[in-house]
Image 1 (cartoon, rainbow, N blue to C red):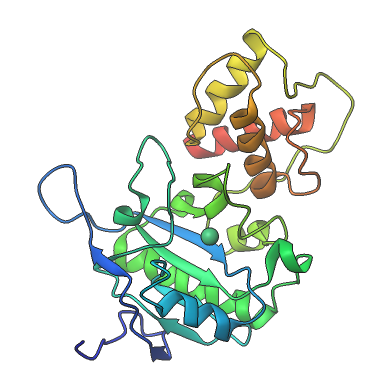
Image 2 (cartoon, rainbow, N blue to C red):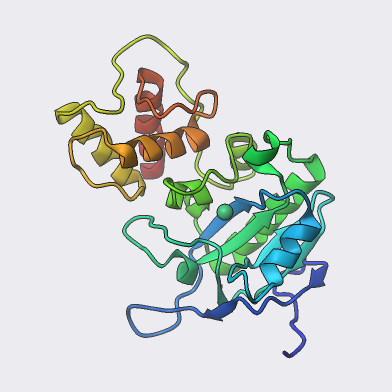
Length: 256
Ligand SMILES: [Zn+2]
C-alpha cells in the first residue's frame, strides 16, 4: 500500500487500515462527505482499538482516531469509504459510510461507566471537526452521533459527550434542553395520534422512524437516542414534556 499522506494538517500520524473502499453514489459521481459521525471506541485502550480498526478480519475502520492526549491518527483517506457506520439511516440516506467522515474517540464508554473525555482530547476532536467542516463544506447540524443514525444498536459517543460545549464552537446542533417537569408523557405501548405526531417530529429531524402511531421498540430506541444527544440528563426512552419541548426547540433551530 502506498504511503498515505494525511488529509488533515491536524493528523500526527498515518496508520493505514485495509478496511475501506470507494464511496458509492446512487447517481453519477463520487459523493463528497457531507456528514461527520462521532464514535467512542468502547474498548479498554486506544491500542486495542487501533488494532481492531486496522485488522482486515474486523471489517471495521474509521477515518480518524483521536487519543486521550489529543493525538490524531488517520487510518483511511477522506476520499475513501471507511467502515464505521454499519446499518444506519439519517434523513432517508442508508449508506452513511459513503457520505460521511468517521471519527473514533478513544473512550471506554458505557462498558466502562462513561469515563470523562479529557479536555485535550475534546479540543483535538473540535479542531478536527472544524477543519473537516471547512474543507468539505459540512453543515454544523450534520455532525452527528453514531447513536443518532443507529439508535437500535449504538449508544456512542454517549450522553457524557459535551454537545453543548461543541455547539459553542459552531459544531453540531444544540439548544438548552427544557427542564424536567410534570406533564403529558408517552411511552412503550402507547398508541394514537400524539405518538404519530411525536414520530413525525423525530423523523423530520432525521431519525429513521416509521409513523406507525404505536410507541414500539424502535420508537423507544429513537427517543433514547434523541435524549442521549439533546436531553442527556435523563435517557429513559419516555417522551416526557421536557423531551417533547426540547425536540420542538431543536427542530426550530434547524430552520434558523
Ligand atoms: Zn460507533
